[in-house]
Amino acid sequence: MIHLTAFDLALAAILVLVLAVLSARVQRSLANQILIAAARTTVQLLLVGLVLKALFANVNIAWVGLMALFMLLVAGYEVTARQSRRLRGGWAFGVGSLSMFLSSFAVTLFALVVIIGNQPWYAPQYAIPLLGMLLGNTMNGVSIAMDRLTQLAWNQRAEIEARLMLGHTAREAVRDYKRDAVRAGLIPIINAMAAAGVVSLPGMMTGQILAGAAPVEAVKYQILIMFLIAVGTGLGTMAAVATASRRLFDERQRLRLDRLKAAAV
Amino acid sequence: MAELRVEALGGEGWGPLDLAIGAGECLCLSGPSGSGKTRLLRAIADLDPHSGMVYLDGTPAASFKAPLWRRQVALLPSDSRWWAATVLEHFDQDADIQLATIGLPDEALHWAVERLSSGERQRLALLRVLAHQPKVLLLDEPTANLDARNTERIETLVADYRHSQRAAVLWVSHDEAQMKRVSDRHLQLEQGRICRATGAAA
Image (cartoon, rainbow over the protein chains, first blue to last red):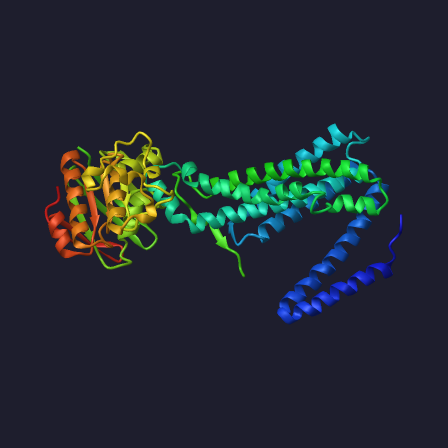
């Protein structure tokens, strides 16, 4: 395994700087966004590296739980921030976090206890990376799906209300839009599974191989991860869409778009 | 038989309003835009949160499941909405659809909604509402986008239904002549309140 030096990373950083300079010609703010995002990646990953080092040294379920909770809250915040029209009063955050919690945590727990069977099951070397992969992907699915659902409800309100006026239930009136939202949330993982190995080499597997793992071992883990991500994303997205679509209507099955708030641009 | 009674109905910036429409009666409602006509109709159909009560034959709206209430107290807007490709998909599966009553051939059920003229659309929208045999019709400028011939057709359809089913009708219109044709009772709204009532109350 070839160790990377700080100089190696600096060379890659120069490439990012070149990209930022080029993109500044297109749009000034785009260059800023690239630089800020690159800086965040560096700082956040270095920090998490240190945290993981400390966690590995002190295997304790409380510390692992705290780390997991922190990751969940940040994911909940990201889901909320990415919606152009979101549910008011903490509902966007609540629905997003809860559905990610239910799906990602359940799937991670299943993988740790039943499939990997490590001792102890919460060994941070397995628990944290697995949960991270699941949360990251579920977060994408949930935020895309919730964004799609609220956008559709907003844009198609006349159709939804026309159906309510004809005595359709809220469920019937919103069913097509729920289906669209779930599909939108699942497209990325379906594409990733379909293209894996043919068009793209998944990042986790690539990282393992670069770090010196045997390709077939890396592939087996990648397949496991893909399946877990698909299940986690699917369950999380369906739970989020089901809960959010209920919140769009009240107890008299009225469409309540006043419960949506446009995000500040 | 079916009577609609509205008590102290109101919302943000309009009401409280009281009114009653007897079975087989038609009440016209007019007023400048923003006077609360549409908000009143939406509140009666229980599409918006509101204060006050609405009764159908003495039974409050809250005693009905919301979809059942909206089938019995049906709102027809001026601009009908269609969410599927063909006309048929917008009717219940067991609906008894009498296209002849609106002057369209039977094959119109399989027409694409996109192909419909505005007159055909509105007649079909009315048929779609009447298929549920509502006891109350709330019409929000139902002929606003129609020519004289299609307006007359809608007026006739509503009058036939009202007389044969003894339905109560609340008709929002801005056309003096139309109001005279369809009803002898007339309420005028201004800034969310009734400012003038003409004709005999039932």
